[in-house]
Structures are given as C-alpha cells and as structure tokens.
Length: 622
Image (cartoon, rainbow, N blue to C red):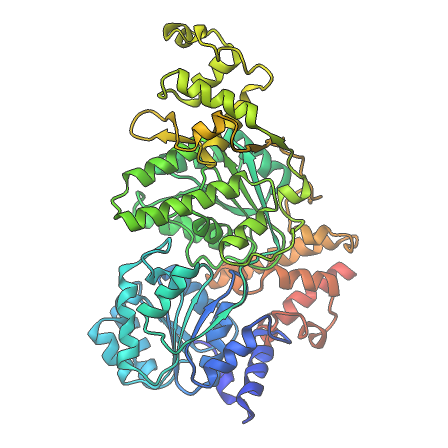
C-alpha cells in the first residue's frame, strides 16, 4: 500500500547535496533545481527551519519532499484539503516514492495499516490534516516515529489577517513544543508583510530563515474588461481563446454559480457548479470530474480551489470581482501551474464595487480589522482601474515594486487611453449633489445625458442645471466615470440603501478644481491574440517552432495518458504533465535513453510508461 520500492533510500552514500540532486533526477526526472529550491532544500536537510514564499507552480512541494527523502525518518506534511493529499500521494507513488495519507476518507483498517507503516519506517512521506495532527492520539503516534521534518502547507491559513484563516492552524505551534529538534517548513504562495509576521509568530518559527522567491507568474496574462453582459462576454472569451480547455469561473454568490454553470452547459460546455451549499457528495463528484477529465469547467464560489493541484488549468475567469488582491492572486494562481500560457480574465463594473462595499459594511469586524479590509478593497479597486501595467500593480502590493512592465497584460498589450477628467468629474459630482445624494449610477447617467425617463420627470430632475450637460460621453463612458470616482475616493456608496452615491470629504476639492482628476478609458475587448487549434489545445504546441503533425501527436499522447489514468483511477496529470508531453512532441525521442532526459520522466515512470509513449511517437513518425 505504500507504493514504490523505496528507491530514494537505496541510493549509494554521497553528500546530502549530491543525494538531493540524484533524487531530483532519478525520481522526479529533472536535471536541475529552479530558483530558490536548492538553497531551501540544503537548509532544511541541515536541520534548519524555514518560511518559504513561492508562487503557485514554482515547485514548493519539492522543497519538503526531497529533504524528507534525504533525511532519515518520516516526512510529515500538514495539508488542509483531502483532495490535495490524495493527488500528492498519487503523484508520489507514480514516481516510486513510498507515500500515504491519513485522513477521514480511510476505513479503520486502512488507517491502521498506514499507522503501522509509519511506526515501522516503511513510509517516506505521510500527509495529515491539521485537525487530525493535533489530536493526542496522532501526536502520540508521531512520538513513536522517527520524524525527518514537518511541512506546513498553505501556511497563510494561520493568519487572521490573511484571506483564508483556519482556526485549527493556530494549534500547530504544538509541533515546536513536542518536537523541538525536528525541522519545520511553513510554505505559502500568498502572504503580504503582516501575514508573514503572523505565520512566524503563531507557528513559533522564531529562528526560521525566510526564503521569498517572488510572486511573479509570468506565464499568466492578466486582463480586466468593463462589465456589460458578463455571461455573454465569458462565452465569447471561451469560444475565441479556450474552446476545449479546463478552467475555473468564480462568482460571488451560490445562486449565480448555479445559473452560470447551467447556462454554459446549455451552450455546449461541460460546466459543473461548486459551492458550500451543495451536499458533500456532489461537491466531491464535481471536483473529481474536474481533476480526472479533460476540458471540464468548474463554476465556483471561493469555496473551491485551495490546494487544487491540476497543472493544466488554462484560465481562471472572475465574473464578479474578488474580495482582495490576496484572494485574486491566490485564485488566479490556480491557472498555468505547468508553466504554459494561461489567462486570468475578469469582468468588472459598478455592481462589483457596490457588492464588495456592502460585504465589508455588513462584516462583524473591530475597527483595526475594518481598516485593514478597507485598505485591501481600495488596493483591489486600484488594480482594476489602473491604466499602467497590471503586473506592476499586483506585485507592488506584495512589496515587489521594481518590476518592469510585463508585456503580458491587457494594459501592456493594448495601452489604455488616459484623459483629463476634471470637468467630467465636476459634472458627475454636481449631478450627485443636485439630485439629493441618494440615487444610483443609472439614474445619474440619465440626468447627465438628458434622458427624459419617467423617473427623471417624476423627481423633477429634468429641471436641474446638470440635466443634459453630459452628452459628450455615452452611457458606458459615464458609468466608467462614476466607477472610477468611487475607486478614487471622491464618491461613496450608500450600501445600507439601494446603492445610492453621496459625496466624500474630497469631493468639494474636486468641485472647486483644486485637485487633478484623470480617468482611464475603457478599451473595447480585442479579438483573441493567440492562434489556437480547433480543440483549444495548449498554445505552446502552435508556436512558431511547431511542425506539421505536432498538434495531432500531442492529442494522441493526451488521449493515451487519459486511458492510463482511467485504468488506475488517478488524474491524468499525475502520470505526466502537459509540459512533459509537449517536450515529447518537440524532441520526438526514439528510444528509452532519449525519453529519459525529457523533464518529468523519472526512473519509475520511464519503466512504466516509456515504451507505451515511444510507440505513439514512433507511429506519428512513420
């Protein structure tokens, strides 16, 4: 049941650094470490504690898996999600590593087998949920095992100021008290300054070395479009750029999740809902289909996603704005974990601003936390409204303020028009004031454009000085002006009423012309910028170096991978990532020796699958 033959333990005696490199090559199939992986691994192998901040897809798991294989004893990984544990264990077993998980999905007999294997030293790695780990029974079990290290994944969950606080993580400081000599790693992809401090303090990682690998995900293209008909905009985005790809669509409410999933299904896509209101069985089935099938779309609230290990998610779409830039970064980070091109696409408009402000107003928060959340909301609005490089704004929020323009966001690829908005702002603010500071954007735009609606006449607003003074802008442009005035802090939303606008403390200065005001012009959505195959296969297959037959070969390799995955009851990506299949397409190996140097093809996988995939490549060559 442990999987593998303990190959990592049978290596000849060499230096710890040499063993780490040998494990990387023979088990994982990679020739060299990436980024900060090597110094992190060497530090932990030597017995040091660490806080690892590394973007999703940056290779965090190797930072604890390899030290667990080098150091004597059992590596214990604290993971918050059962699905993630199973995926990680499946992938490790495919690579020939002795791994197991210990959670509520196991029968009593199966759990007893895992516990016995732990005590006997027959496992290299075991994954445990935080709730289980801190029980006296589990701590007693660990006390009878030789422990190589503790890895605390998704460590931002320990912080009350983070976006995904989980109370059970607070109890993990017991590891320091019970096992003071065992090295501990805390790992996360998302942590601003206050959250980092919380992680170190609450987990008692006082002597830990902090490794910050940066937050940039250069393969993700960031795009924010002005919200018009969000569902129609989403469908056009999917049809033009991701006709056959797997992806995630985030919505703010459960009702909207159900509605969008059904709507996409009616239009020929395989779209499944996921939210906390569904029964556990339905959630599990939908998640399993997303992980194990190709081209499935999950439509979800934020209840879905943390710990999802699927590497070929080609897009993450937000039909409603997320609650903060931390949440946005975490959610969009689920795209493109394999390093191939992926999209982060969002529709954004005034309803998002109103909804987010209403959520903040309704939250039961003390004054300090309310200030923190207000700062986070303002940062998100600033990101959505910026006319500069979106990646610069996003990375700057996390403290990386010297990043050059990325060339891979909408503002870099199609620079937004920035215009002097003082006169327009004065007209908009005057309309808000003269109508009594209680009407929403739709009515105010009608007043400015001189639209004689029943409501305008009923309130006598067709007699105001501001009636009809804004015909130079169309409705969409005025909606953008009001949205940006809210984002800039010159207008506030009455969230207790019906979304009416009222002047802020800074509005009089704008009305007097004492402060400059600039607006970005909402760009029309461009046509798809990437040429794609008819089935929406990974765009890297169709790059300038592609040869005739490459797309067909890639499709054949994926089809065989899916067959093998179904036979074994595992997700396709635990056999090979898309990136590994793409390398097979490019290099066309003719024998096992050539196959063995393909990144991601370790010794165990070469033995199990080498001949099968060589036959497909040979057939394409013939």
